[in-house]
Structure formats: C-alpha cells, structure tokens
Length: 98
Length: 98
DNA sequence: TGAAAGTGCTTTGTTTTTCAAAGTTAAATA
DNA sequence: TATTTAACTTTGAAAAACAAAGCACTTTCA
Image (tube, rainbow over all chains, first blue to last red):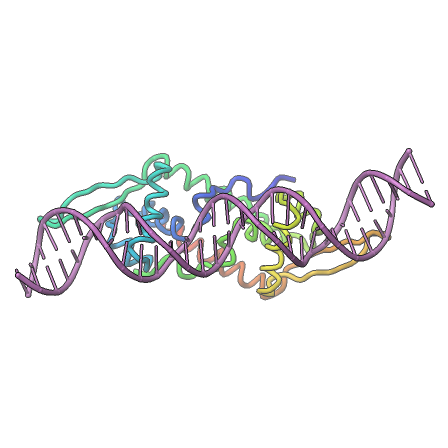
C-alpha cells in the first residue's frame, strides 16, 4: 500500500490558501478586498498567503483601477489550476476508499 | 456569499491527521506501526498527531498483544466519523462550485 | 545469559508557520 | 485640510510541526 498523503500539495495544507484557490477556480478574477471580506482576514494575513501563492506561480496579480481608485485583482494561472486539480485528485483518491 | 472555509475543521488542516482519519474510516483498526510506515513518520511526530485526535475524541486506542508482543491499535469513534464526514462535506461544497 | 532490537511512547529543543497589529504610501473623499 | 480607503510590508509573538534522543518494557538471537 502507498502513502496516502504523499501526493497532497503542501501549499494547500492551509485552509486560507485552499479557500483562495477554490474561489479563483470559479471566478476569473477577484479583488483583494473581496477576498479579504469573504475569507474574513486581516490585510496582512491575506497579503502573506497571496504572496505564497504568487511565489509558487499559482496566481497572478493585476494592479488596475476602478475609475481612479486603485484596485488589485488576482487570478489563477494555468500552473495553479493544474496544481490545485492534482491536489483535489489526491484528496479524492485518499477518500474514495470510503 | 458565505465564507467558504468556515466549515472546515481546524483539526483536519493537518495532512497527517487527514491521512490517519482517511485510513481509519476504511479500516476498523490500524496499529501504531502500520500508521507509522504508511505515513512515513517518526514515532514522536505520529504519536503527537494521534494524541491530538485522541484529545478531540475522534479516535480511540487499544493496547493489546500480538502473541506476546505489545500491539497498540487505533480506531475511529462515532464522533470522529461524523466530524470527518462534515469536513469532507465542507470541502466538497467549497469545490463543487467547479 | 547477555546484547541487540522492537514497541510505543514522552521529553526536549529547533524550525516553520500562522497571524495580528501597527506602520506606510498614495489616492479619494468629506 | 483631515479622514478614510486600498493594499501592502514589517515586526513580533504564539502556535504547530518535527526530529532526535531518552525511556520502560519485552522479546529474540548469538
């Protein structure tokens, strides 16, 4: 028998990063503020998790404007989509022994 | 919209505890040693995660023998089964927006 | 019989991760 | 002009994860 947790991605051990990814899979882009409110996080905490996902190249940032107000949005990259899917597949495999 | 991660159980943020539970859902009981080998952990690390699950009353310990050799086994409790299921349901709800 | 090895821990100490709070820059609004 | 908002970064503390070593007890092996 094989180690059931070996294929889980360490980056997605965090519920917050998992939440961000699950939101970005269904929304083409989401603003910093919307993520913050949805996940009920402090600025710093969200920013650092987003940074982790960015470093891994799982998400991309866009700095734009709404009217003349700054607006930062995030979207998932192809690599991110792939890694997230692989993680979910691994989860499923662990659990589908049920 | 609702916070997608609010219903995840903090105890199952850990890949190791997730692995233990997923194994105990399908096996009535598993020995310390089998868990250790399957999950590729040091004794101390496994023992402390098992302790966390025990404190939460998600698993139960049986100290027995195989022949004349000591053998500790673990099994899932009804509460553990329920909590794990709830966690998986929450995960599914997060993701099934896919 | 004595040494080595196995089981299942606990203890200790380090490293890693998480997080909140405060500070920051720049623009917008009152 | 003062306050607010957005989106951070920095700092520091608390929590979690983990390996390594120690330990008590037993069994197996030379």
